[in-house]
Amino acid sequence: MSTINFSQIPDSLLVPGQYQEVDNSLAGTRTEIKRILLVGPFLATGTAKNGVIERITSTIKAGEKFGYGSILSVMCEQFLSVNKNDELYALPITDNGTAYSKTYKIALTEANQTGNIKITVNTTEINISVVKEDTAETIAGKIAASVNTMFNFFMNAVSGESANEDATWNITFNALNKGDYGIILNIESDNSKITFAEDSKTDAADSPVSDWKVYFDAIGETRYNYIINAFNDENTLKKFAEELESRYSATRQIGGRMFAYLKGEIGNTSENDSIVGKASKVNSPHICFIPIVQTSSSINTNEFPIIFLTKIAAAAITELINDPSSNTLGLEVAGITTNKSLLFEERQNLLTGGVATYNTDAQGNVLIERLVTSYTTNSEGARDTSYLDIQIVETIDAIRTYINNEAKTRFKGWKLSSTNEDFGAGAKVMNAEVWTSFLCELYQSVFMEERAWTQDFQSYKESITAQVKSGTKTWLEYVHKPILIGQFYIGAGLNQFK
Image 1: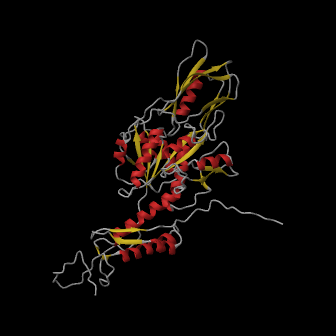
Image 2: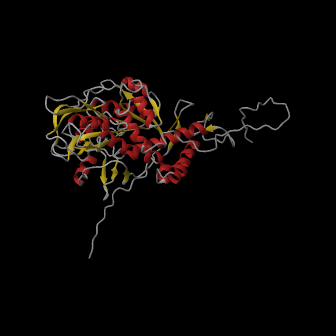
Image 3: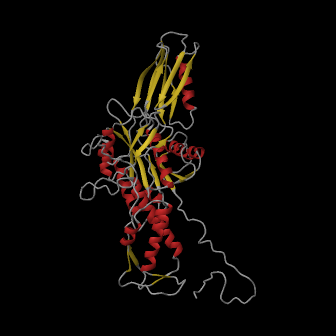
């Protein structure tokens, strides 16, 4: 008969009575808390401190912490519009670089004009009505008031002064954050006698973070399963690729995946400034790039890139949290639009180059197509598809985490035997046979039947080798080869009709 070990009822107890300990270790399910981390610049109007991670539960809190209209506050708002259930955190980075600014000269060629003015900032439209009493100065004031009352908007407008002695007036639009975040600004008037002429412009310019160490120290050993990063310069992507690989390692096991956007022409690996060229320099199984395709004459979406990125990433993350092996093909992303669908050849080139793709349906809705990682070549420079899709690394990480967590709970306090002898029913002794049985149980009942992460149980069972390491009495080592489930992306048939 096995011994029952009590933790609260001592063996020396003599007082008569009925005593029962309560142990919840076998009850319920143990699921990992999934955390999302947004990384972006904040404004001095916020109360947050540089490099101090904040837990965000609402857009209001994000605005207070990071400054309304900041890149980081906008990212929080967009993520929460898709997913309010999972734990959201944000890492504020000091604003740096040169901010976008553009000044227009407003003129009325004749007095007593009426009409409508449409201001478009990326895909946000702001409409102003002009009445006959309006002057260039009052029109500028109306524009400034309308822009500046937009909630959590990433630009402001300042009514300036008379441009000269005539009846003109200046209106200046300023990006709140420094750096190039892809602002597209247009002004239209339906009355040809109310005109807007560009007077001056300051182009945005990035000043990338050079040293990410202090921020990685702030992230520490807390596991963030997903990161959405507003910064996409070469140094930042390289440093995050290295950090994510380190976090995925056997000694840390706090792996996570990162989403960022790349903008430019699709290009190829030999074109350094192209989307594919930039992705090839990263070559990480933990980073998924969302493309914005821009040529000298066109761009495939007018969305503010940070909004476009965050919306797509939030939709993908929400799906992958529920199932790391989920087929995300056709997953709709609400609230964003594109100007045109990418052609088959363009999407094939992006996917081959380690960049994710999306498409649109007949109604114009944006749909995720395939979430590939930027890992395309091995250390020898050969084509390597082992981490082609994000679901692969997600599922492997999920399997590892589940096995580790279950083993810690189930085998806490167990001893280790190098033989497979019978120590009696209930004996807390681990050996190679018990461990192999444990792996097989999880594989079949959890990873296959419950979650459909894996397949081919018999081959998996035959792949397991477990043993106590020679010369030790504390170290069990094993090899196992999970066979992951796939995603039904392609059906190829030959229709030989007669």
